[in-house]
Image (cartoon, rainbow, N blue to C red):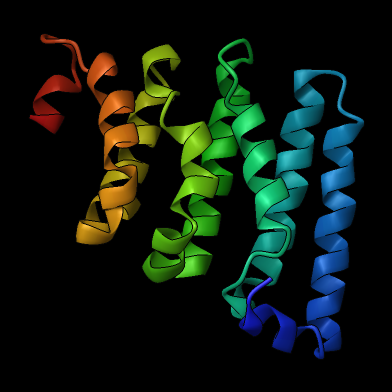
Length: 166
């Protein structure tokens, strides 16, 4: 926990936010089907959006792990799309400076996705990269190799996304 989060703990509404995130994360533990994951992601999205004023995501390590698990290639594209929606909400909340600092937390799930993604997921994923990752500029450098490793195999010459990225 950084100093800003420690200071926020004195705010009762922030503590309620942390408790709500904890409660939502429990839903992932009890998920037995992909539909349960979509439901858990929807609840997480709602909690994050309702508390966007804090510009901090509590339990970010656990959330990053759960989101990465939701991007497993064996899961259907609906789960992937819902997880990408959650990533976008988080990226909007934390802003570019915190994203650069927490790049490793969120990228571990995103970078390997493109090569296994369904056609409906690829444009959403590429949109996240364009909107949130590329503007990071030099601060993206620690994750650049992972980004390139994730993007290049998914971009086959002749595909509809090839021209978009070249």
